[in-house]
Amino acid sequence: MKTLVIGTGGREHALALALARDPEVTEVHAAPGNPGIAEVATLHEVDPMDGAAVAALAGRLGVDLVVIGPEAPLVAGVADAVTDAGIACFGPSRAAALLEGSKAFSKEVMAAAGVPTARSFTCTSAEEVAAALDAFGPPYVVKDDALAAGKGVVVTNDEIEALAHASSCERVVIEEFLDGPEVSLFAVCDGTTAYPLQPAQDFKRIFDGGLGPNTGGMGAYSPLPWAPADLAAQVLADVVQPTLDEMARRGTAFRGCLYVGLALTAAGPRVIEFNCRFGDPDVQPVLALLESGLGSLLLAAAQGRLGEVEPPQFRDGAAVSVVLASGGYPESSSKGDVIVGTETLAADADVDVIHAGTSGGSPLLTAGGRVLAVRAVGTDVADARAKAYEGVAMISFPGAQWRRDIAAEPLGVVEGAALHA
Ligand code: AMP
Ligand code: GLY
Image 1 (cartoon, rainbow, N blue to C red):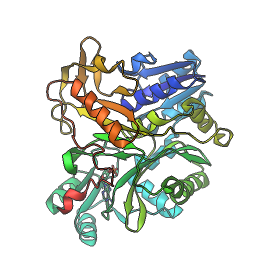
Image 2: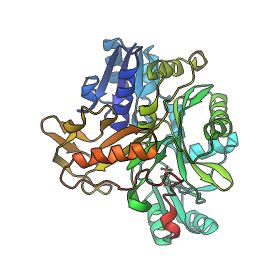
Image 3: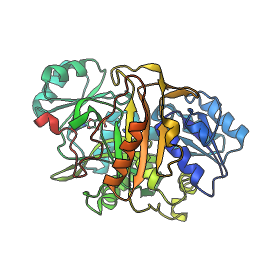
């Protein structure tokens, strides 16, 4: 099977590595890719937002499967262009990607499907915002309705900050604060059925202890030894299947990864958000542990015949990813800083350097906010964590920032907990 991965980040690097490991996959191509992906895939130039160009590239390469990594091309309809060209594509249509593209839409689908989530109001005026903030009280949760690259959500006790964020958005969703550890569950969906992957936990805030602003994710681990053993099955039954049924009923069947962001509250799992793609870095440790073939799984999902392949199998043990971000992240990011030390990890079978915002080669340079992650597998979370931090200690670049507490507390890290302190 020949495959083409679209995107440039850590998620795409982790996908390319897992595809390259699958004995059924004979070729891995990526576009535009990054220097890390270039080590396992053949890179091509393409504008990931240009559906016609992506479909043309896939046709020229004769690939059997296109995997679209990021949300922006999915929301823009790039999967539709690939599918219309007769090529199997893992990633939802533009209409189905609205589950991530509009928070208000996803809330509406959750309500129609009876999916447990935070109570919310969608507001378009200052009066509506004030009334909604009053109705729930602090901590305030204020979400830009539109895609905002991980920066659209403000969770704060400060009403002025909540009002300021709301007034910077055209349409805003204000919702009840969900109290409990956050979990990422990825469901591989074929339009009617789904297989859940192993749950992961993502550390969203920039600073240790869950302090500072939200980021795209500063580290992750999987599995979650403290979570209920039937968590994935429960979320499949209560969240994923009803959502797939509702989307199919609307004529916009969801094929691709439904990323369920959950809070495990005292009242049970509640959906924080839906995304229409794998999460980064949260999918990194999950894919590190995947033992069965990723290519055949995603191809079957893309072709609407998931039932014909075995559910995904995971090896024993655990995996941890620790992200190194550039100076200034998440408010800004520094580019062009020289990265040293990545080559020293190349020989370690248990440790990968997952590239996100890198460029060049020798020397390797920073090229974005989240620069790279060190991912390690081990016998358990503590072992994987120790190996990941040993790897982090080998790598340096000016201004590098990373959290010291990724996976330190396997017992339900509550990133919002600092708000209550
Ligand atoms: P989202 O983009 O919806 O994932 O939100 C980003 C982050 O904000 C989440 O990962 C949570 O940490 C936090 N968050 C979002 N919604 C809520 C909520 N209703 N209650 C508590 N925290 C939330
Ligand atoms: N790590 C969070 C995300 O990918 O949205």
